[in-house]
Amino acid sequence: MNWVEAIILGLIQGLTEFLPVSSSGHLELGKHFLQIETEQSLSFTVVVHGATVLSTIVVFWKEIRDLFLGFITFKWNNENKYIVKILVSVIPVGIIGLFFEEEVKQFFTGNIVFVGAMLLVTATLLSLTYLSKSRGKNISFLDAFIMGIAQALAVLPGISRSGATIATGIMLGNNKKEIAQFSFLMVLIPVIGANLKDILSGEFSETSSIGIIVIVVGFIAAFISGLLACKWMINLVKRGKLITFAIYCTIIGFLAILLG
Image 1 (spheres, one colour):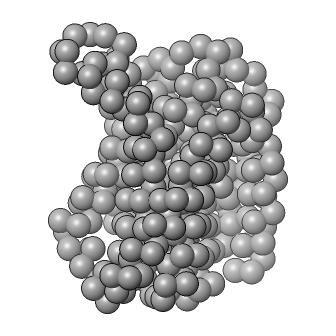
Image 2 (tube, rainbow, N blue to C red):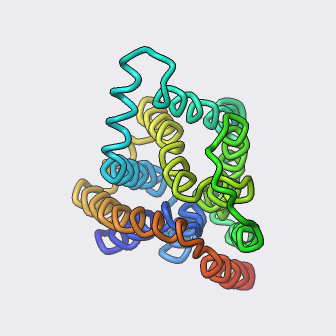
């Protein structure tokens, strides 16, 4: 992998992590057409995911700070209720990660036909939001768990995590602004946990074969594009402008199937 490829993949990750078009699916397509080696791509994926986690923390710094300050009061307040909802949402993807990790990895082998099919699933979910009306209600513990199930299904390349969770939240009738924030915050624990696991297990060791310059360039590209995409997506969700992404996922999905 060279630095130009790192910039391309970093931009893909940063933009598509927050936009409802599947970052994992687009990364798989990008790696396929750039012919990136699997070993290198695994390590690079850890890096760019770390970059978008940092983007999320920067964008939602005030909210995260308030949650922390509320947590250390050790009282059953709104902040601690919110934290518990996030923990509830993590349960489904945690089960997948603990018991089905190897099975999930089998889907990340460059099978762009499968990615295309899952992009069509994403398009369907986003299209359903066009027919749903938000009732403006707050996210309940049950809503958090159901959104967590959507997040767990999005471990498959091609199913957008943000698209699946936001679409689910809208169909449940939740407040759109709250849905966007909750969707982006609920992913922090699983992604940070998965990255730490990969680092501790040695799967990150292949970065030495990529080169530090490539790693840094990819990280910066993912971080900056992630900042922009996250802020943009929050505004799009509040205005309910998701049908465009449904059309995009449909087009890319069919192209991936045809080219595969």
